[in-house]
Length: 304
Ligand SMILES: [Cu+2]
Image (spheres, rainbow, N blue to C red):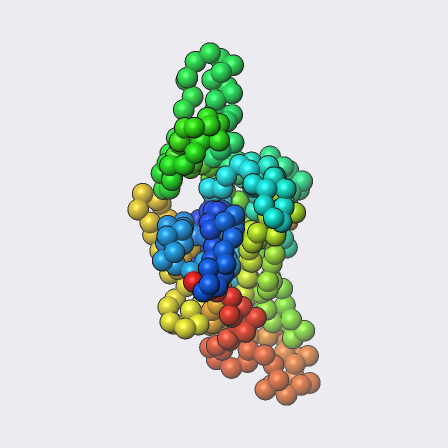
């Protein structure tokens, strides 16, 4: 929409990565070694080191926003058998976004439109395909590249070459989607935002939803701003990263207060005539600069 700060030319940017971590759930050390979650690029290193508590990913949008979502896969190509699940190939992971519209000319996310080629291959899978192509051609012309932001990753056992090690993020890919947040009005004709939108992986959902790999897109009324519930820090304040253009969308948190511009909450002529039959004080958002505490998204941090 013309005049919106986050339109198709200047989209709101989120750069996120799927990662696997050994997450601890309580103070006596109960932990799960194959937890898989989404984090913004700038939060991946402190989350893996334990400096930052992992928390559910909430990607915040406003009505009329065009969002550009970067999806990086840093997860092993296989989920190992454990007490809960069988060994499962997880060689490709998608980010299926529900409800918002999507731009299929770039990438529509796994299973948006049932296009299963739009997932993001695991770096293990990329290296396996490169090895197969080289073997077929009898040369070593192709070599996996380090991700421009994440580098070659931790040096661990190479699943392709038992007994050898490899940087497990070599060959990591990033795919890009665009999302468009439609306007939704309440019974008074006021923009209320699309609300909470579910987002998850469609390639291995029966495995991944049991180990935490899903996210929320929370779409608020147009031109809203968000502040961290406890620190008051402005979220989505344009955090930039070394060697990366644009912002990764941070800082972020699953818990936030929302500030809305009164100009975007003013009822339309139609809704004013409807709302005039009701006391004004009952109309949500009629005060200037309403501050709303989001109880529905509070208390969501994992135990550090
Ligand atoms: Cu889905």
